Length: 82
Image (tube, rainbow, N blue to C red; front, side, top):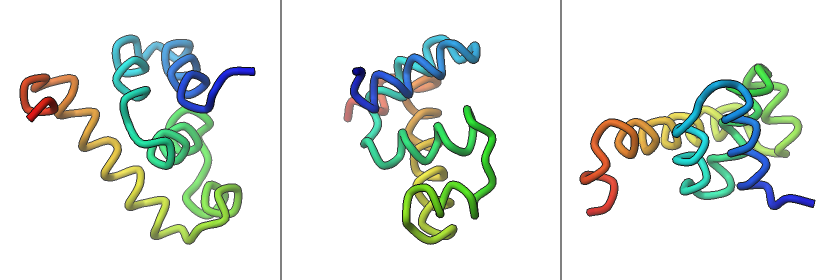
């Protein structure tokens, strides 16, 4: 059985995210899972929140922070290492 991070990266690569999947593996597990549910599995915030047992606002925050970190990693790799 793969770790959640590896599963999320594999899902991301399978969906054509390429290096985005590799970058996803560097995010905290909570952000990875929120992004996987919202972006890869295409669930709404309410359903993702139900599955994660957190509020929809917490899902929004995790997705937002995770996508921000991914953008920095993918488009400004030097910024993400500081």
